[in-house]
Length: 287
Image (cartoon, rainbow, N blue to C red; front, side, top):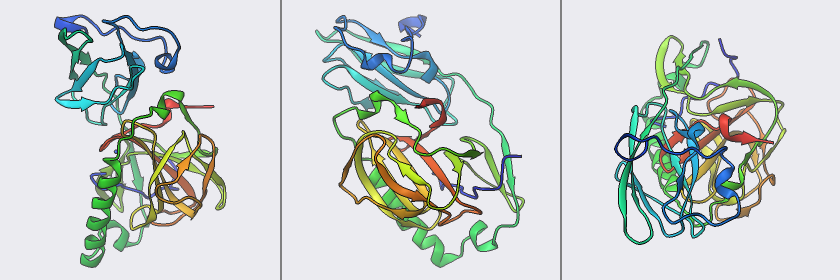
């Protein structure tokens, strides 16, 4: 059983064409490499084509993309991101329009993953089954979270990689099924890093703060958008040191670790989103 540090259960809350396989870049950092990209090139790292995965790809500048009908931002240099949720189906369809107008579809095989079951007992009943006043607050907060996660700015800071925001024992992993006081709950959609209250928390990448407030489930919570709708979430903080609209740099201190909100001990809950889609942060963290 994974450690009892985190009692968070975020609400609802975060192939080639015609059968040829997508050409995989050698690593997730490859899209940021310098050099010209051929007019019909499209590189997507295979490591990101999994349930919960973030794939940072590169296309010829001027390429237009949609993933399962959703428009995908592409930077002037051709950098883009694709995200696949915990329960993503086995295949996704990427529609590509190259510079010059040639269009094609690529069918992306999404690798399945197996998820752990995490049992956490001894929680206050009000945290497991909130009453009516708490539910009203939760719903209002969810709307604000949804609005913040709709933010999409133009510069792909995420392409430089995501830095570990803190170091400590891993007390909860992405995708694990939460059973709270014997009652099945939503999957755990983030990475929990345990440590003492007051441990400094750094921004995983450069970006802009889109939310900074105290929420019912996650306590003191920060969201930072890193371009193209790629957003990190930092939860259960004891202190927030930045404000909405503020620009932050990679590795800049932004908060302190705590145990606010729905938590059984001090830790950082780190979330990663592609728009509203929750992703697994652990495979893409570096440094």
